[in-house]
Image 1 (tube, helix red, strand yellow):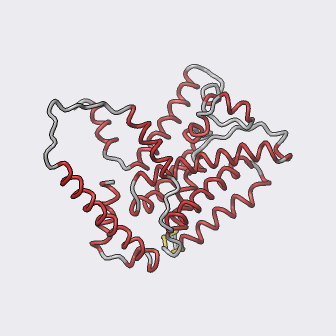
Image 2: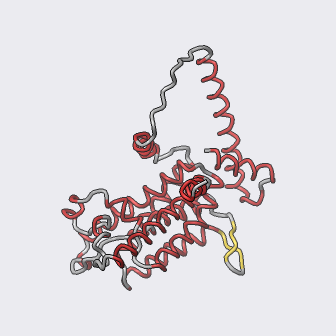
Image 3: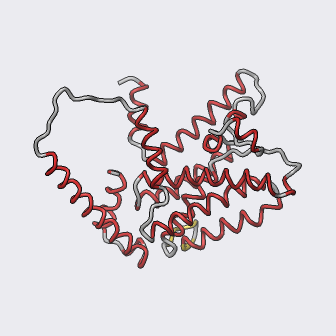
Length: 288
């Protein structure tokens, strides 16, 4: 097996959060190497993907509302973001499929970008600042605050002691609010936008409403463009309706089991689950 095929195989075995971490690291390395080897200005490549603060500049590169989240200003900026993404995604993906993860992640990045644009063009305090937005922090805050909202009483180990998730979520939001006047105001505002998305998404999902359903359809349409269209030479029509009905019933029963376990977690915490229930959730997250 060639090195390329080996890398492709390793990448395919990663979960969606780990794949995003790899993409972010690769983008950082490539950008850093190209700038160094070609002796370019530090932002000569990044400027095409970072989110500018001006509306007119944004209209010239609308893709930046998403692409800004794949670029980081320093190795420590990247490290802390990816570390937080790794740990918060472990809780998220034990409960929900990658579809929900991608919805929350990218919608968090988008709302963080919208908060950044609006704030820099509404509040006078930012009028003399010309800093674009980069970093995955808003998207990661959306994931973190989602799990803190959906499982508020779930305890996690924080170095030497346990802490409930809702305490952790409140602490992160307060830190951003306190640091607004101290520097990197645009970044902290974007964090708050991502946090709001995660909070609202979790609350609505608890009510049985998926606010990211439309966005998920858009992602599916985009991904289908890059998938090869495999046509079978034979057309099988027998038992189609029966098979469809059977799959639908099976899927509904599967979802009912997941919903029942999530209700139990919400009421009594993750540790109240039996080993079988934990294994079921883990397998459901992998299969989705």
